[in-house]
Length: 99
Image 1 (spheres, rainbow, N blue to C red):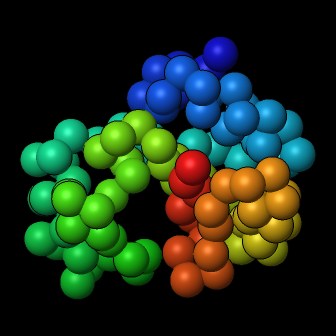
Image 2: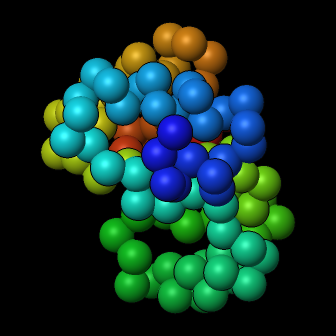
């Protein structure tokens, strides 16, 4: 297991690891965020190029989401794979994968 996988629900971490095997250079940049961390990110959302959910609505605060850094075309391919196994990914937030 990767060092970042501890920030995910135990049942989700193996799925995230599995997904990243399709493009090994992809890097997980964020998993679990506390309420306070998500609130700070939300309050600064105008400076973030990606959508940011309020703390009450973010799967990151539940350990059920992870963000990935990879080229956009790779994120789209990973997103299609993730959606095909029942995860949630959208072109409107290409770095965000959730379950």
